[in-house]
Length: 146
Length: 146
DNA sequence: GAAGTTTTGTATGTATGCAAATATATTTGC
DNA sequence: GCAAATATATTTGCATACATACAAAACTTC
Image (tube, rainbow over all chains, first blue to last red; front, side, top):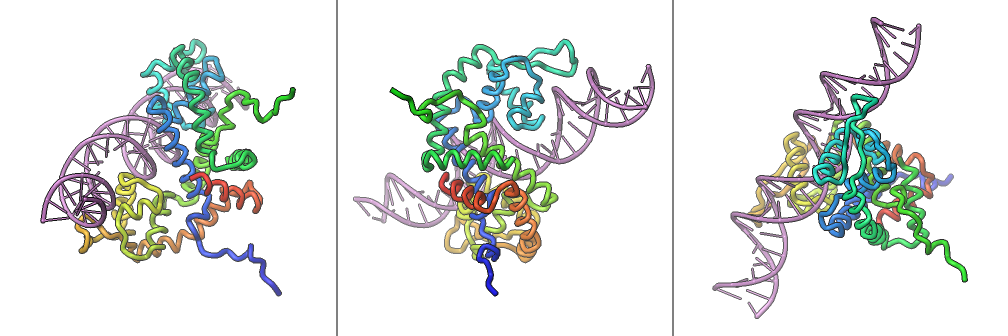
């Protein structure tokens, strides 16, 4: 009678835990992002602004937050900072008195256009250690996880 | 004359950016961790306690932080919370008057032993959408990124 | 149309995570 | 042996991120 090596659990090693590695990989990317962007926008602010320009129509705060993967409390803070810089504007909905309808300003769209090449460089630098096949594989696997 | 499809950049899609996907995957894992751990320890606190028990000798605050991937400011807060719960103890170094030497308490080691099976279940649940090969592949690719 | 549920936005508290500045102690270079 | 560079720990400020609780408005169901 034999034992399959794959069935022997072995010791708990932090480096073998997805959670730990996800955190470290994310940290590395954030460091690259912050350094390259030079304080123009944070990663979450950039994602939020891109999403808002994609939908390109008035959208509620919570709905936009969901499209970016933020909860309501986080969304409020991010949008407050974007609005303080006139990159996003907000107006009361006529049909739903609870809602604020959000849209990008011209300054917001201009900033995205300016930062887009930088964002591509950031992705490139983050993925630099991987081959083209590995990059595709990583994205596919990450997409399965959420 | 033909054009290689791989050379045509295409539009910028948020879902194709590693940074965005890393953030979402990490969020999903954190949600699983928090729910399963039931408030016993956060993911970072657990990692820190495991690392400290691994080195199993007095270690300085900064050195431990580096082993877990935290900067000095973050490390201080995490350790303060662990010490407030008597999971970690600290004493002044005799040889280096800047350092506090850290070690786990019996309560800290007991808690890790108790939570270890839970941590394995959390990893399992996070990786549930992936096959064994995909899991190994993901870990290998993540390890290359930092 | 009234009751119960859901959605939206807000507020608060806690926990990472980093940048930058500070203070003290140690090590290194010469 | 001393000045310069490093290492350690701390503090502050800002930015996610989530849990929780709340109020107001809208929707569902009967």
